[in-house]
Image 1 (spheres, rainbow, N blue to C red):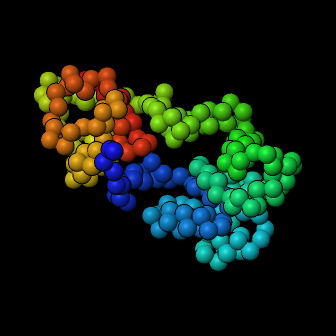
Image 2: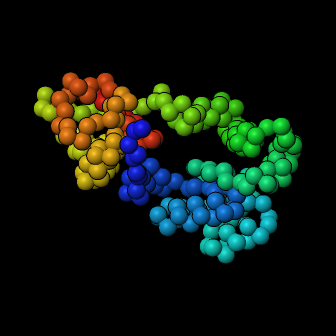
Length: 220
């Protein structure tokens, strides 16, 4: 059995969401908890909800709360956190149709997400977003659109904590701890904790992965 990798708050790169507006759609147990957590982390959060007690509670908690279409229009990032039991109501309000009772809840939510993205962007964007999600979280594969990162080593060995600090905005101590926990890999192989300095030839052309979602392609 592989060792378990434990991630902490400092492992998350909040810089990816800086200056972005995050819309929490559905202010139930999950929605409220995540909205408060994100706001406490210094991010801008708004709420999208139907006109019920949950929407009132969001406002009491100090959030701007809108009808769902308006929240989506204002947002850069949308988190769909609708409770399972109210899916039929959201289908009726947002799509004007009924959810397929033969579908699993997760499939109903995927369809709702696709339709919302398609409405505010287009169907191609909806398909691309779903494919990206499946690539990362179902197939655990590397996405196609990875940014290149020049290691610029001039032939000298590359100190991996330093590279992670510069490429992903981590502190060197955070980077070292992630390597020790097996949370950094090259082409799918974890970087050994006792190899913090690697030759450029060993890095060139490889994809470095930090955690579950951050990737760069290294170029010497």
